Amino acid sequence: MQCCVCKEKPATVHLTQIVGEKMQKLDLCEDCAKAKGINDPTSFAMADLMLGLGASQELDPKAGAAEIKCPRCGFSQADFKKSGRLGCPECYQTFAEGLAGLLKTMHKGTRHTGKAPEALRKSRETGDRLKLLQKKLNKAIEAEDYELAAQLRDEIKALSGAAPAKAAK
Amino acid sequence: MKDLHQFLISPLQAAQQHGPNDRIVMSSRVRLARNLRAASFPGWAKKPERVKILDLVMPAVSALPEMADSFAEAMDNLTTLDKQILVERHLISREHAAKNVGSGIVLNRAESFCVMINEEDHLRMQALRPGFQIREAWNAIDRLDSALEKRLDFAFDNELGYLTACPTNLGTGIRVSAMLHLPGLVLAEQINPIIQSVNKLGLAVRGLYGEGTEALGNVFQVSNQMTLGEGEIVIVERLEKVLSQIIEHEENARLTLLEKKPKTVFNHIGRAYGILANAHSISSKETMNLLSLLRLGIDLDLFPGTARALVDELFLTTQPAHLQKQIADKLSAEERDLLRADMVRARLKDVSRPVTK
Image (cartoon, rainbow over all chains, first blue to last red; front, side, top):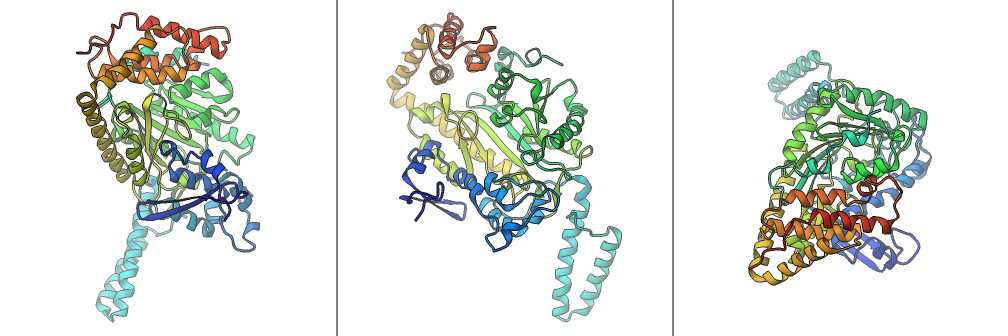
């Protein structure tokens, strides 16, 4: 097994840490382990190391994915591998598929639940409400409860009429 | 152009700012990462684009009522020494200090808000408060952000939230942090288990100057790491809970040490006082570590009549850039060590030996 930091020497230090409900594993060679201060727990937080490793992670290992470039800024996967940072806001759409997995390992969830710019807050709430109603509607239809379905349909109509439920994407 | 040194609060004044629990929590900070929708992130944008962004963002930030009478400057107009002083004041990151053309800073008079422009993201806005006030800091930066979103078009996605250069900051773009002075836990050798358990909660513990720095002077920075999947308030509340716990552990460690090993505590503090009050050459690192013990001694009433502010002021003025600023000639590290010792001796002239029974 190769060291996951330098990718050269064999890994002899194996680390497992459980953060919340997620298990993270690292395999390092002795030199990299020392360099990252793994023998000294005061200066070592595995999450830091994991996040640092984001830089050398593949966004999308599928064949052909390496050639994808962001249409707005020309950023590519290889650039992400080098810096661990993206090129522009639109890159999140360009590389959405590859990023999904990475985000799961990094964060508590993959959907933002915090603050939103005020201008978008309303359409965001409407969008959420519409999604919920649509779900209920599907259920009602499945259950052949047409009275409820008609009611929900009217509600959806009213809501999307009042504020066109355009996603801010 | 305003002179940074006339603008900055003097170390004496800075040390006299008080907040709740400031004997353990030295300061609180909340920062938000924001980016403009239609521009490349600073690390990928070419110089002309970065300059354009700076020219757009800096006036927008300076025009906010909270930032009236602010210090707003492009990084290439600051000397290396000025930048280093801003780092020593914890107003900008070391990464930002390395920036030049196309990056900038806007700092308000009270030093309660500092916005870095074109650091890793287009905007890194921070609210700073003395003592344990992370909720107040969050409320303050939340208001600043809401005011600014009316002037700038922030990149936001319905699923992913605020879009940031590094996916690790995605979503809320928030980092809530507090700087803690934990000499009791270090002396009692309880600091490692505490750090480990804090890490297990998904929080980071770092040294004095953030990422990748050592815990000089027994000062530790605790902050959240995850930014996506939970709201800002949830993150702030978790930090509040964990910090309250750490404060309690530190207080207990101090009490237990005094009760079980008073001689060890007095020995450490007495020696620290002895060296600081008598040394003729001292490095910045040794100074920090000894000042930390002196600060502990003041907290434990071993130096009646001496205020904690004296130590906090020396924490600042003995750092390399602050020291260099007082002298016109460029100093070598050895010369700085001599000067530092002179200064510390002079400031401790009226502080008597620790009172121990």
